[in-house]
Image (cartoon, rainbow, N blue to C red; front, side, top):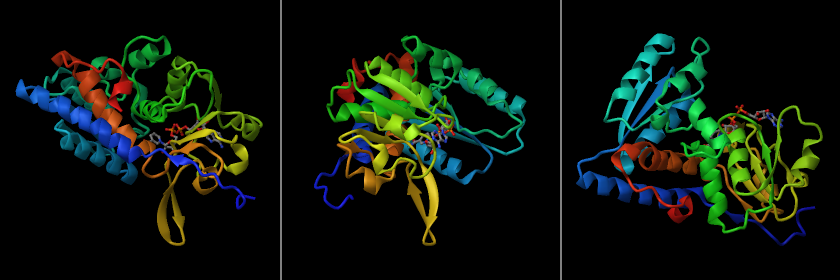
Length: 303
Ligand code: NAD
């Protein structure tokens, strides 16, 4: 069925775009350095989950690459909620720290909502706490979660008019699906959010001019789910063992989808690097506002 098709999608290169964003952040950090101001990002990880440890390590490394000071806290799995809250309280007061990131998920004995809401909203670099989430919902200024922001910048990078496009978002989590819906609504898209209980999901996804896949189900979206020339943004990161080798795949079956979409993001090398770039951007342009850094008048000019 796929053989006779001559069209293949253009790949939206997340690594390339992320490097452009990082360059802008790096320039801003050097400007600040001349005034002896050094933006700082604190990351907190609890326990030894392998994937989370890699994410946090990469975030710290990327921060250092652009000149952001990275403060990393690795706490044991059995740390008490009280001790974690105490650490956050101290980081909230610490002038060397502009952004605070708590890697999720947290162990079950810790109330994640309480922890996230204890971060000073102006240092909530992930944009997950109640004030920033609410600000996005009612169109007020606030910190925008990194992954949806990265997806939006990827969409903007291809210069497609988003106005009136039907965006189907697969997944309704607080960190990806819901904020993504709000951001695209702001771009004047028409939004449908589908999730694990949605009936007839394939037919709904097939109506999307834009598909944002964030379900965490490997290869969920196949050729027959996709409208011709749709734009596909794959947020999913799924680890599979294929022929004895570990492989990362997204929620969209890439080889099939690239034959019918107009643009598609790869996994790896798509949304992942952009998430980290947006974290650095948020640290400097959103959270370090106390340093009076000129924020770009529009995020578009970053790309
Ligand atoms: P989550 O588990 O919190 O939410 C998943 C959502 O998908 C839920 O709303 C659920 O209703 C929906 N869902 C589950 N099964 C479904 C199905 N069969 N059909 C339709 N919807 C279904 O996950 P999350 O934190 O939002 O992350 C989603 C995926 O994105 C994961 O693979 C995660 O690793 C990845 N992720 C990637 C980045 C990145 O930087 N690239 C960042 C965050 C999350």
